[in-house]
Each structure stands twice: as structure tokens, then as C-alpha cells.
Length: 454
Image 1 (cartoon, rainbow, N blue to C red):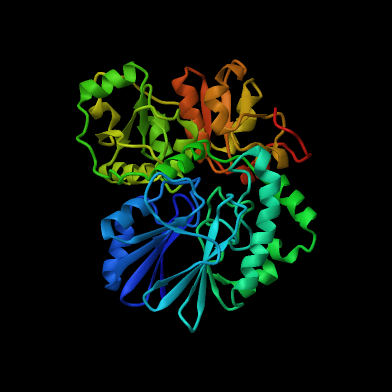
Image 2: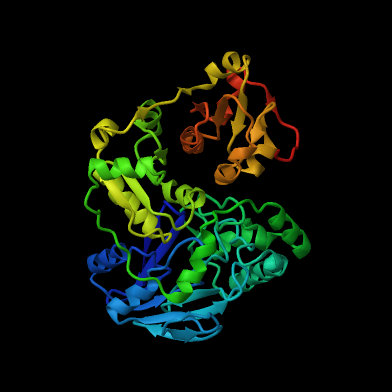
């Protein structure tokens, strides 16, 4: 048995191709299935089975299309209310895939119908735990509904223990979430691999003997999660169509100018440094990097047409990333010179500074705006700073005080997005492009007391 890991760092997830040298099982594939198919070709194996651990909340699955394309059996929990044909599987059932067996284990907690899979080739085992048992943590339990969270958290505790008890201690553990995904209930371990035996020693779901304490602690540490999650499980139950990854024909200057003038969403993918110094008036900055799609899907109004502006490579990568969360067929204007892309549109800028500029400048007035999450702000913050998390900003523009806004976050990335949104809204904004951890050394007074966001 060989396990090939397909990483999706943009969402903090992993998919898996499990094969015996001839045939393969794919577990939790992302929507852009060409990466899995390439791995299968390289390994010289045929995809005969595709399995889902659950109806995912953080991305659209590629499982439906992958199984259809390869004539593979599509293993989906018999209890999941899906609109497509599948090979229903339930707790305790086994499926033969080449030289190994696949056994389904009910592990509710992340969702009500969550399954894990124990794969056994007669010599060793591999456990594919989806959003159940992660490295050092477990999947979050509040994505179904607030009313279900306590019950699901109790189930998560029991599920993790059942799974650990049914697998061999030396079984390799392969979770889907926990590598930066917001589906993790706590920051998971940065380990690249683990075993069931190791988790028995280090995972709080397995080491905490008090179930009630575990439930209270997990729920207390749940933080905000992206708003686009609300659309994922519903779409996955329908069976998402194939990802559309082609870069569209670039818009001409007249059409791009019209979209800017009409207030449509034009997303600039260039680095935030370049955007601050020169950008098309009315555009917004979502610098292309691993977290791009998470924050764009979280912040932008759902379902509205997007126009991407940037290099061909960035546009191509952005289209792939957005397809994974159901943002379909954005338009594009390929190029990195704003003035050349729309010569008749205004090119504008706003200040971008480090912490060394903030003390003297803010003495004359203005508000320090912290766009980190509420839990980050509650832990430590700039004294007197106002907290409006980035994902709430568009809904709370009218709540912001008049005057200059000095916008910061933890690293400068989210602040760059926020500054662009505020500038688009006509506000006087300064982007503090610096790490929060460096503020004290620059002489910025911090408030470390426990606090609730304003």
C-alpha cells in the first residue's frame, strides 16, 4: 500500500491517492481533479474508487466528477442526503480495493454523518480521518448549527477515542483538515505525519480524561470561520460540476473602465506594496498568496461577478483557487500596469507605513483600526485601537469614526485588503504594513488585558 498526498495549502487541506501498484482509492479530492489524475498517471494506477469522509464545509469536492470520469465507485455515507448516485457505505462496512480492504468507521462530530476509513493491506494500516482526529486536535464542531454544537462536541470526543481504539497503534494517520484549515477546532500540530500511537500521547481528545472539560475547552476556543462555508455542504450534496480553469479572454480597456465606474468588484492580485503605490480607482487589493481564496470568499459579497487584474500566472492560479470554493468563471484583465490596462481610468494611491511612523503621526489625530479576528484582539492589542474584523468590514463601514484610519492586522496582509476596501469607500486610510509582534519594539503602547471587541 502506497499513500500519495495531494496538498492544498491554500485551504489547509490534504487529499489522498491510496494504491497497491495497480488500482487506487482517492479520498476527499479537491475540485481541481487534474492533480489527482496526474498523480495516478505517474504511479501507473487506475482510479477504481473515490471516497468522501463527509460533506465538506470548506471546499467543493471533486469526488463526484472524478468518479464519473473514471467509472469509479463513489463511496459516500448512506445517510448523507445527496442528489446523485453513489455506492452507499455505512459504519462497519468494508470494500475491497485491489489488495487492500477499506472499512468505514462512523466518527460523528465534525458533521453528523462523518466517516473515517481504515485501510488495511494485511501488513499495515492507514487511517483516513477527514475532519475527525487531526494532528494534535480534532475538527471543529460548530459548522452544522449552533444548536448542534454541544452534542457534536461530545460525539467528537467519543469518535476520536473509538477510532484510536479500532486502529493499530502503528497505523499511519492521514487527516483531511488541520494544515491551516479553519475546519480545525484548535491550531493543529505542524507535524507532517503522525500515527495513532503518537496521537494517543499528544492529542487532547485522547489525553483529556474529563469529557465535560474537553467539551468546554473546545467550544471556548472556537473562532470565526469563513462565511462561504455556508454554501459548500449544500453544493456538495448536489454534486458539483467540473472546475472551469481556463483563463478567459482579457477584457479591453473600455470594458474594464466601465466596470470600475459602475462599482463592480475589480480585484487586483498584485503585491500589496505595488497596489498601495498605484492602482485603478475603485479596485480592491487581494494579493495572490496561499490565503487569497479564503479571505476573498470570506469578505466579498457572495455571488457577484468578479474581475481579476494581474499577471497571467496570478490570474490562472486565482481562478483555480476560487473554483475550489465555488466562485465560478471570474473575468480577467491580464496585465500589471494599471495605467496601461485602463488608460482613461484614474490611477490612485494611499500611504503604506511601518510601526515607526505610527506614534508621531497618530498624535495628531485619527483612529488605529485593528482588522484581526475578535479572539486575536482580545488577547493583545494596540492601546485604544478599534477592532472591526476584516470579514465584518463591508457590513460595518458606517460604524467607523470619521477621520484618518491607520489599519493594521497581524502581518500586513489582511490590513492591505482592508485598506483597499476603505479607500474604495472614500476613506482617508493609511496601511500599517508590519507585523503586530513588532509594534511594542517600535514604541507602540499595547493593552494586554482581557477584553471584548468594540
